[in-house]
Each structure stands twice: as C-alpha cells, then as structure tokens.
Image (cartoon, rainbow, N blue to C red; front, side):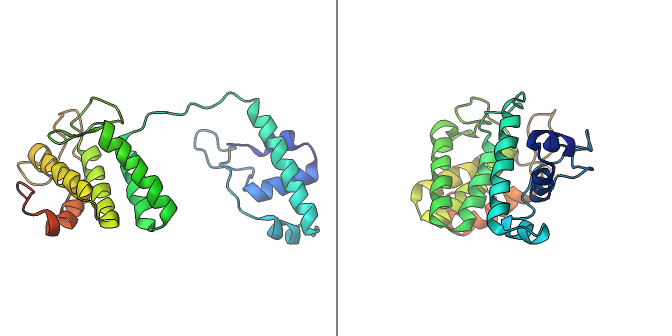
Length: 219
C-alpha cells in the first residue's frame, strides 16, 4: 500500500508523481480502514489514457511511467517486507483450482491440475478426506472437503480422468459420513467451530450424483 505522500517522496519529480498517482489510483483518501491515507495500487489508466489526459506524447508518457515505477520499486525494496503466509491451505487452493478450471484454457487448466495433484498426493486420505494443508496431518474440517469436492468434480468434468472421479466419490462419502448434521445440512464436528454453509457441499454433491450415485454411500 502507498500513501500519496509516500509516492511523491519516492518518485521525486512532481510531474512524474502526478502521472504515477493517476496510473495507480493513488489519492489522498485511500482504501485501508486502519489508515485511510493508504491506497492499494491498481492500474486505473494505461499509457495511452495518461498521454491523452496529460497532453503528452505517448512515448514520453511510457518513459515517465517506466522511470516512476523504477523509483517506486527502489523505495519499496527499502521497506520492511510484510508478512506473507507460506502455508498452502486446502480450501483456498481448492477455490483457486475450481476457478482456474472453469476458465477452460490450456495454461490455467495445467496450473490447476498440477496444484490438485499436490493435494491428492500430500493431503488426501480416502477414509479421512482432505487435511487442512498440503503435507499436513490435521483432518476433519468441512470447508476443506467441501471446497475440494467441488474442485474434483470440476477436474473430472475437464479431464474425464477416473482418478478425479474416484477422489470426488471418496470425498463425498467423507462429507456424508462425518459432517452431515442430524437436523439436516452439514457442520464441522469440532464444537468450537461454527457451522459452515451448506450451499457448496450440496452443489458439489448434486453435480457428482449423476455419475457417482452407485458409489456414494448415502445422500
């Protein structure tokens, strides 16, 4: 995140700073609730739009953007790096896998299937479903299994591979055996955890049912 003052100090040249602020949408009142002056960088105007708005030759606008970006990178490199969680969480990866496969494009499909293979190899057990993280040993959360069931059904739809269908059926049985609530719907078994939404597991089970009904233990 950047404040307008931070951007100006990093870029130096006032004219280039104005261009960079317009390019990245940096303004006096920003996006962060804990510090309203901070802005999340997003490209809001490209070189062509900025050249027209600032009445500059296109090549001059491009050169100014490149120089401004260089100066901002240098300033950012001197800041303490923010914490980045390196853990590969099952539910978050499952959502990414499912979304990438929905694009139905070769490169996103390949990326999604590689990620899915990691979780099938390091976080999946037929009897227990999916662990919380890749390589982890903590099993038993509804969200991990519900999200991965949806991703597996999408993977099977995309590839037709029997292993994806088999893993989806096993995960569906885990959902039904371990997370079905006696009053209806699904909930985490741990008492400290709030019930999760039923929409995703029901949606995934509905998609799986036409091909997996003879293998799913109960519905």
